[in-house]
Length: 383
Image 1 (tube, rainbow, N blue to C red):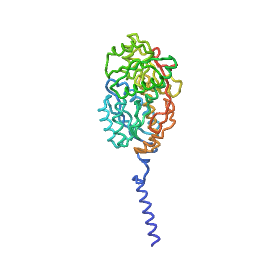
Image 2: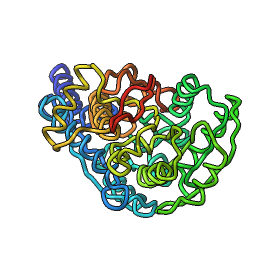
Image 3: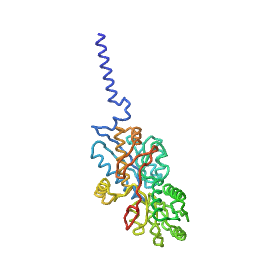
């Protein structure tokens, strides 16, 4: 009887363990959540700039995400759903959209917002709420340092601008520079800080520093002063809207020296807006669409087939970002936000269309940029 009773209790104990496992009672770090028939699934919230003056950024980014999601889901081992919210390029709307996504417990992590100004208000909230967030176009100084849950895969201005300046300086043997920047935006102000610091390090004479505001259309006063100082090249920290207009007006005034821009200048929209006046713009970028690389060529073809035009840097960074998220989701084994964050932080030597990519210990970018210029209406390698 005692022997029979032990068997009964053993059987009951085994059944209890099985029930606990079925209900998720064991500490698995979320490994079972979101997994169905061997497929790991997860929702990602996207905050992007879809309406307003800079909507071309958001359109390219969203296209990159959607194309990557389509490919990833077709493979079958990871299933991704994107929940997309518009920021309109405004801090308040970005924060509202971000909070809406964060309040949905089914969302594993966030991507975006687009501008550093927007990101700076959303990222602290995400970090406080323990949800990973990655910027795919945010290049201002200090982004990953916001918190442990904050990452980016876009090369920061502090890496891109010095690389471009070194190349241009080696070719032109320049001595004097002028700087023009938007003083009402976190991103353009950060670019200016880097430009000024690097110019001083390189022993360049800064002949004048000019400022402008978002949406400004007349730069005659600033450019007249720059022209009178006769710089060897002009450092411009601007988004493409203002940057292209500045270049157009500069060329019409007879200013023929090169412009060296920050990340906001790195868009085909500059060529669309400025036309021939865009020639002579030098930027550093992780993305060069003319690269002789099978992955780059395949991406160009797929993107053009899907959207009727070639991708830019912002589409490429978004595309790689979602693949990085898919790998982290797979490693995490499911929808647990903390497990996903830890898996994401371990990203090393990811081979994407941008090249080999890793996060450093702060969640910032480890990769080498390519310096390009606009020549005859096309981006080409600067040589």
